Image 1: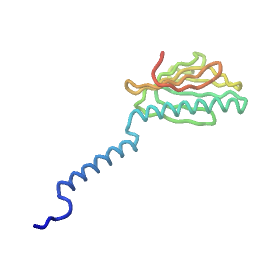
Image 2 (image 1 turned 90 degrees about the horizontal axis):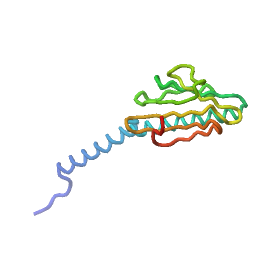
Image 3 (image 1 turned 120 degrees about the vertical axis):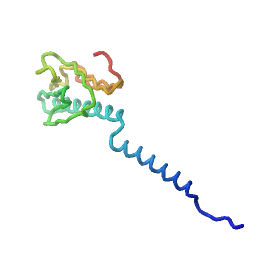
Image 4 (image 1 turned 60 degrees about the horizontal axis):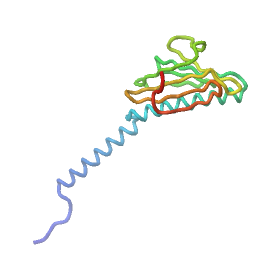
Length: 150
């Protein structure tokens, strides 16, 4: 009796299902579907923009302002830079009272010597959170996991 070579229909179907599952997972990851990546990316974006504002203040010798609206999730910074964070994120900002033009707007001002008015921005998604601290004396911007003190 001669044995036939090739694959059975069941084997082909199993392989096709596996390919579809892997493609689905890959598409979700590429489209930004992973919530943790959105949260981490948004926190990094804000930290980078805060550092840029500080660098601009030092380089130009003029005060620079970083402003974030915690309700509509929009920010604006030095050099007419602006952006919007994903709507599903929650933002809590703590800044100097003198630098708060409206209840939903927080402002951090950077001075030519590198100092700032200081503040903290916490970005949350569910139970996860990232914290961005701006030191008032040095203007140093630090990014860390966790909510910290409100």
